[in-house]
Length: 402
Image (cartoon, rainbow, N blue to C red; front, side, top):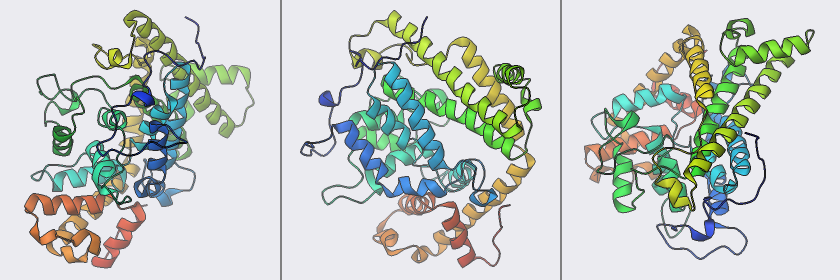
């Protein structure tokens, strides 16, 4: 099937004019539709700015050229818009979901999340997707009339369903939540503002989720090669990537190594985007949806990799996991980072008055779970650098994380 790249709006695209609205009613903007307005609110938020100094894989002083959460987020947004444009979907909704998907990440990436999850295990737990929801519905304090950013239902729904439905229709947790249940903050919010946790997310949200996978694959390969964790020769045995490496060598046998690496990333992104477009067009043709609701209540996602590309994606992640995410050098730094977060939790649990005044207001009146949630919210919002500065303030030695 040929790849279509037209921009005509599809009948099944989310329509900002038909949005289910915001929790708190607001006057319409005369210059922006509701989804564009959501994008702007994310971009101007404090949490979004902090992503510039939060770890993707390598902590900030490993080097200036590695991805941060912010650069990763921008790359995801670009890919999400490309997919949405080709499929006739709403680009603004796809963009806002990409921009917001990592807002809830703690300092030091998944290492920080692991430390917070352990500390908060008996107090509702910690999950970065749930934290993203808390940020945009409560923790951002920018508006006179409400807490949070008061985003549209469609944005909130897509944010919590970043990896698909969270429950069955009768409320049983599914997927990665099957063992431990849906995070308490998501259940609490959805009880007040039903996000239909059992249904598929919009096609635009599905674009953002696939864009995240594509960005991870291509750019983590780039960062891993730059960090000398593996070589092009090592990764040439991985399906699809190896094919691309050999194509480039055949056509440009004298190409310098750095340019060769960039060419691999560029071609990998292109192949994956084109595959998603073709596979999604096929699924959409079979479903024949006549509205965005038909997408939401379908039995499966409509934006997806083909079976072959899904296998290639799995192989890439299977290569990167031991050689990059679990590389001894990375794990050593992340182990120290986890200890920094654990120390901060312990300190503020004993001495909550050391938190800034806006975080201690009403603290004494909270129950144990509420106090721990407040401490977790404060630490999760820190950048890598601020977490290290705070640790150095209260502890005699602080690791350099190198």
